[in-house]
Length: 336
Image 1 (cartoon, rainbow, N blue to C red):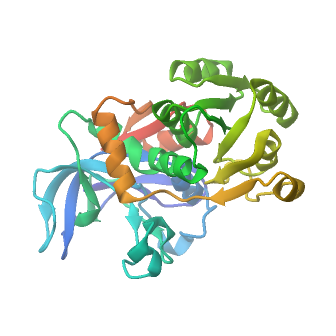
Image 2: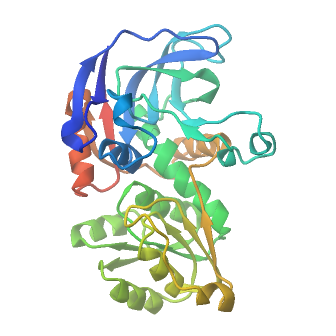
């Protein structure tokens, strides 16, 4: 089979098409014919050598968390059947710690993520596969496991209700677009930011209630305050946008941070926490039942995942280049 492997951790030019032996499923495993696999900032950080998860010694490395496809073969004890249409929940957990027993599973003390979807076939743990309705495309399904699941879980941690207003800085990437769309599903008003008027128009199209076109923190604070009271912030950027979110949040507001696209630190003033009772909460991915719910919502027509581009396996390098240049809106999907 062919895989799009990372052979050098220096950026998109480090992706090469490589031949590997066809996989064989073990106990409780399944081999999936990959029909679609979206890419994420997580994959790009690995490719750029900016992740402690993968070192030069692991090369060639096949990334890709968000696998959708058809079960081709099963091992002994597998919980799926050949021919099943499925999407993978990429969570990897120990199954025995306190958090695996009591939940939520994404707090597992050994939490890891699946990698291997940028290939014609992927070997996965069968009980992490979720059945897909016939009316849900592999392309749309592959958008859900990381970006939409992350945004959905962030909304739950922010404890928002219908009618609340939520600040989404950097609203045009995978998690940002997901936050806007899922906000519409939940009945909240979203305030999204972008530096591009073209992307601002797209945000309007997918239901963003208020769009701020600026990358300047002071401008953003002024514009968002002009909208009115902000109850929560979903922040995948971190860096200076942590303080931006703190300045626009109401008393007692919650900011949920899931990434570091704008900076590796969460630097902000202390006063809002002890004077205004604000909170900053960390969040990683979500749970498998939450992903199952997202599959139901898409199948029921609640929202359509936004696909910013599709690429054959041999153009995986171009997909990562487009992500690195931040030219895309929504999810980028590789279709082997």
